[in-house]
Amino acid sequence: MKCFQLIVTPKYDAALERAFRDAGEEFDVAVYMAPGTDGEGWFVHLPWGGEPRTVADPNSYFGFPIDRERRRLTRTVIMRVNGAVDDGLEHFPQDNYVITEDHYIDYLSGRTAAQVVPTQILATLKKANYLFLGYTIADWRLRVFLHRIWEGPKLGGQNYWAVEREPDRLESRLWSHAGVSLYQMSLVEYMQALCDSIDSRRSEPRR
Image (cartoon, rainbow, N blue to C red; front, side, top):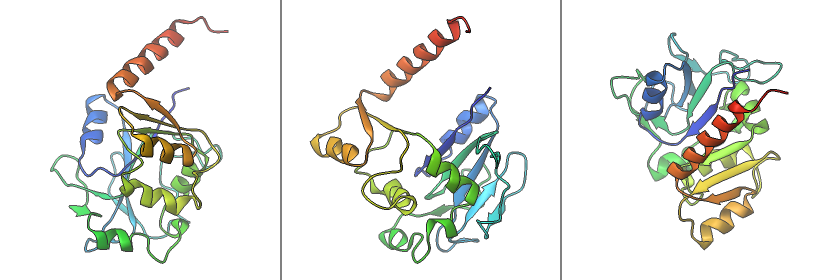
């Protein structure tokens, strides 16, 4: 059975989308709309091959490619929690950025995560295992969003891993405090090891 990913990113560029297109993989996008944009304060769903849809009622919207009973993705979903740049290729609704201090102060302000994040995605996030790549825990942009999903110093009750090339003592302590297992290596080394592991498993006889 093919497995798909829910990728949460604080980045603004469309590199992920271009990589999936180059690989011939279909995907959906959920992008948060920053203050001053159409649909501000909500997520917009860009379905594969479809038109953008503003998710103004997160609890009743079930348009994402996520099986409601099994909570399994049937297509990759890229979630952009800080907006995105319209680079002319990916057809984001418009340039929008959660980037200033005021933006972050107001981000999801006065509302719970359940009132903003689509129910399908929120349920998946709360039950998923996490792999943090290209992200340091000292970078508070994504942490603002994650802290709206889980209260308290630690994340949820699943398994969490992070890959960081040269974490300092503070970084290591913060990852540990959040309940995340940290692996010290470069992303290139990690991806090569991951590909080698996948290839070796494919060559093993099925039981």
